[in-house]
Image (cartoon, rainbow, N blue to C red):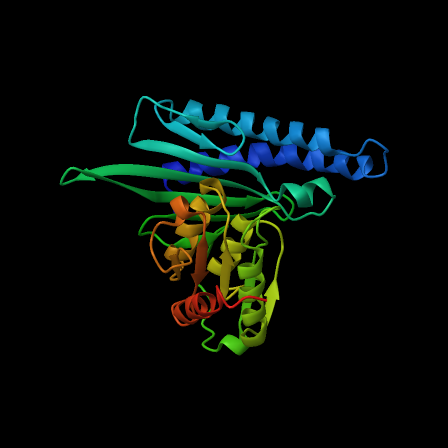
Length: 276
């Protein structure tokens, strides 16, 4: 059995507790689909309740850590070098429509200072799908796991055999033409594209070898923090869409195995301004 660090154990206990609540609420959402009012307000409340559970449990275990949360934003902690990054319900639109593909994402970000410069990195992460009871987790330099099984990224070498996950840009984006041009280029080169609606789960799928790559822009830090360490610890590569390392600052991510990450980047860069 894989040995989990104390941080991963804390994250998993909190995620499973919040996940049980989400499963109960998801059952209610399926009933609300047929009501004239719809489930929108109920789902917002479910999202906040899950975040409350996570904040309470994580805060009890590490009371000095700060938080960066999707719903309530940043909460500074006494220890400025450590914080939890939490998305209590990634895949909210799926949840809203009764589609059983959503997850909880938790990561630990650590800040260190060297030569007067601060550097922040993700040192542990967990993505939990309560519907399938799949827990994807990783510690820095200790590998990535699906429950107790070691994960490795896919070994496929050819783009025409690769399955690539993508995410749509936010509504009202000014970059729709660039997105469509990139997607068209990927459709012509890749073996297949999938859009499932949860960035954290899509990155976990790259780590597990289910996808060969993943690309999306317009994301928040809570969408990618846990997923990026999963991919790295599973032997993959992660960058922003320009090939740099500012993933959480830029809001863009390109992930893939060592054989296809560079080719995926090249396709995206070449087609970014090609137009429709």
